[in-house]
Image 1 (cartoon, rainbow, N blue to C red):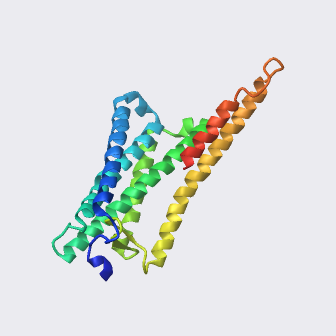
Image 2: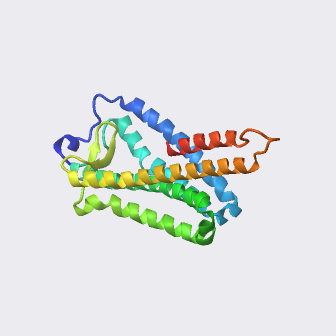
Image 3: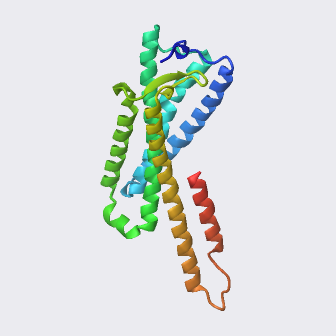
Length: 247
């Protein structure tokens, strides 16, 4: 960490209590919605026979990790105006390093969960026969476990000399440090680009496949007695749905 971050104080330009209140409301809303859906999913045991349920539950669990392990630190820091975890600079740095590692891990697992859901949707729709043949619940759990291990490895790279952590005095969080870390910044950009690119490509591919399927179905059933495209409304819904999913 550099000297400006060793103060561990929130920027004077930031309204700490207001920011803490906003993050607190977001945390409460996320906690309620994600917990409710996760509990609802867990109560329906039949759903656990579907690999998609595993990937969906993984996404909800990852969201809860972000909510429970990163947001409270930011709320406390912004409300108090400084990083209070540790009595000395050395202790504060150690706590900040650990918090930053948890922050990176939670963001990576949350992003990976979206990637897994996107690929699961792609194979379920576009490669339905292969999906039913090869994808099982046990394999879904293995894939999720691998994604968590990958996130853990990537989040700990700064501890091995590749990358750095720093205190973000604009919103009271310990995060990856990019200054003087060109290699780490480029590597992180490539990793995130791969994740986001995977979501975009699979979503667009799945949308195009679904549209084509609907058009072919409309062509096959269209007759003189039933003019028009009976699947037009469904096609518009597909475009809107996948557009929202990509966003």
